[in-house]
Image (cartoon, rainbow, N blue to C red; front, top):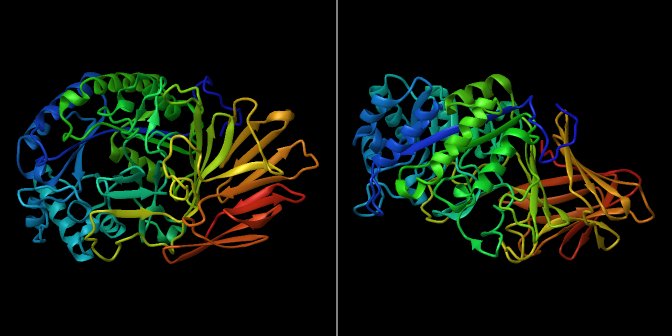
Length: 539
């Protein structure tokens, strides 16, 4: 690992596994509106072949057994392409598996969670659906797929597919709030080995992990995704998802695409960095025709420069399994505002291990912790052993700090909301210059130049976060965790331990180098004679 500090203009970094997959997935029907479902596939194929890019094509069951898609792919896929399976249920799939179809009348595919996703089916039904899909896929393609993806999956299905069919890679949706009827919040930022009891959580113990990695889809903006929308220079506020999807304003933004690629290719990423590009064919081609070609052009240049591994999902999965025995440490460092905002500019640093994820965010000159999420093999995912019948599904991981859900106005663009704020006495600390980031083994170190010639060093280690202020003064450093007390999961505060309770799980943060004390809106830890340490491993 390099120990040089990083700035946005730093040269290319090496030594990490940096992967980009072009994944285009294909539905056979779109009951919500009329659109040409083949045209996007044709245009996508034309562009990836033009640049000689590897690509992964994922077929939903209806597209696997009907329509022109298999014939088209067999005629056009290159040697560096792969065809895999998109695991959302539809009427044809359920009939083949002899499982009840519960979609709305005249909907052969229905996007609501209890219909489209495995969590809407019993464990026995999930196995039947998986077996039916794999049998049909092998009949058509002569082998089982290497890659399986869906917006939403579960550990029972994943474990079965891994153990029986040897799947090399899975992909699931990014974190999101109430999009298409489901929330995902707190899952790892890039790639991980899932727990046998929770596919949104990395396994803490190697004995509890499923030995096929999951990758996060859509190329998520690490800076603004905590908000309900994001501002653009000039004052316009965009309420769409801020991802690399070519259909959205972000994916069409030259600035956003450039900053995103720079983050994946050049910024500190620890052992693993990942992004998925591409688009589902449910979006009409005219809506993506502007951005998709530009993204493929830019990706080809990254590939030619040797900046990233551009490969299929299956190849990324196989290399991941060869390189890592457990979930590796990883980071996303975005020290430029991805949309060019200046009033205020925002930037973000994410760190991830199999024990926790953390987000150090910057809004103008205010640095603060925005997210601390911990993982435990004792925390099963919602609907692991039962089928949901809800059209509004929430899947959240246990938080020490949830800057979104615990804020008084979640997702507000105008206010900071819940956070962990750095203070001397009752005065919050402010940046005097840009932060700098470096890697040191499995640690990520962020230096924050402050007013009065002080420097705050935030160090993310695999199981802990620590805070060091230099030079020391007469007033001790504090980290003040503040949120709406009606929304948090805080259970109790003692000097060296802060306890939480969430969805039946008891978990805690061990404090070193200082003492914790309760406050009206959370808790505060104040240094004594050592650096403040927050130990986040749950065992």
